Each structure stands twice: as C-alpha cells, then as structure tokens.
Length: 342
Image (cartoon, rainbow, N blue to C red; front, side, top):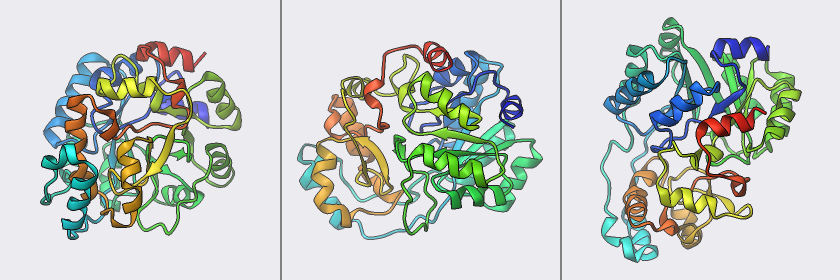
C-alpha cells in the first residue's frame, strides 16, 4: 500500500514537507522540496484567494512536480465579547498595547472562495486540518481528480476520515509543532505520542498513513516506514531552511534551542498549539480561562505577533515548533530532504 500511495502522490521519496500556515511555506520552499523528490506543501489556511492563486502559479513556475495545498476545515466562528481579553493583552504586553483593538468579522478567510481557487487551479493534492469539510466540498474535489488527505490526532478521527472517503490520513502525534489537528467538538485530545497513534491507525483503519510529529532524523523516518507508514511529514526542521518564509527572528529563536523548550498553549490562537515557551505564553498562563475561541483569539493577537516580528522580539511571537526543535539546522530544503531520506 505504501509504495502504491507514493506513486499516487507522484513522489519518489517518502518525505512530505508539512503545510505550515502563516507564510512559512513559501513557493520557493514548496518547489525546492518537490524538485528534491519529496512532496512540497503550501499552508494556505490564512491566505486570501488571490494570494493562494498567486502562490500556486509561482510554484508551477518553479517546478513541474505535483504539490499539495492545505486548508483548515471550516468550523463555526463564534463571536463573543472581546473587552476583557483586550484588557488582559494590554496588561501583559504593555509595549504592544497600541496594537490591541477589538476585531470585526470575518475572523478568517472565506473557506468557500479558497476552495474555489483549488478547484479552478486543479490542485492535484489537498489536505485538511481541524476536521472534515462538507460532503459536497469533498465531492467537488473528487470530481476534479484530487487526492484527499485528512489529519487525525486520534483513532476516532482517523476512522471518520476513512468514512468520509479520503484517500489517506496524516497521523499527528503530540510531539508535533504548531496547531493540534483535533476536530472541533472533541471533548478531550487523546494527546497520543506519534508511534502509539500510528500503530493504532495502521491496525484499524484501511488507509495509507503518513506520520507527523517531532520527526527530524532519517532514523526516525526509517522506523516509521518499518511500521508500515507511507511517508513522514516534517514541519519544524523545514522552518529553519534557507527557502522558508519564516521571519529571521523566528528562525534564529529555533536554532538557539538546545533542548525541548516547547509547550502546548492556546494563548496565541485559541486552539491548542505547540510553541517554544516565551514571555507571552508565561504571562498568559494565569488567564487561560479567559482565552477566546479560535479564530477570534488568533486575529486579536495577530497585530502583537506581527509587530514583535518586525522588531525582532521573539518573546511575543508564536514560535511554533515540535519537541525536537533543538535538532533544527541551517540547511537548504534540498539538503534536508536528502538528509531525511538517507
């Protein structure tokens, strides 16, 4: 199953560059990974339809290989009072208080119009995080001959992805950096380590399984392949590559880590995500019960994070990273793909 799935993905190497939203997955990064034999992925969840179209066209200028585009499955955008959280943010971020203002909807780009771009551009591979889109959305993609990949943090989510007719599933272990892919409405995140989650899914769900979470070394990739995984999806290690679109302050913060300094937090976005711990996360810890739901909290804190990035202040940026962040290196994306597939 693994080899036939690689053929369907159109890649010779079992390496997938994770689709990290927020500008990290530049067209240059995606294309370089594709040209090196892996699968490059565009994290398009926060992008406008025009920006997605521009990025797809640029990727196609740089590579003739297949690539993947990822979107967040839509979920209700709950509008709740923001005054209390604005006051908290102004108090814990006094140097950025002028950046804190109540935000108006929409709190995120429109999923329908994002999806229209993927259909119009006939993107060959599409993955979703945070759940499963509506049946008619999936049907439209299938009619476009699109290979569909879902993201699961539990056996139950993987089963739901199978039931919805997806072609493959990414098992996201608790070690993974960035947002947890846990479906909305789940009472509790199972928080399973990657190997445990992979074994459960491979044993009970009849889908090709990719693996994500703390993967930085070729030995880890081989161990997962030996279990029966189709490919390893790597995120954090690509953030510090030369082609990554990550802010230089972000890159340097990850390269400076010498141990696992990460933690799970909702402080930045309202959704559980793994980040290098910093001043903002510690300052927000006493206020965890006041954090607004995703994507409202995400939009409310975005100006703080953007300004901090401009100033080179990593203490108030969302430094998404997996548990093996200390193994990040300054390589080209091509060199990293070769290293991971040795």
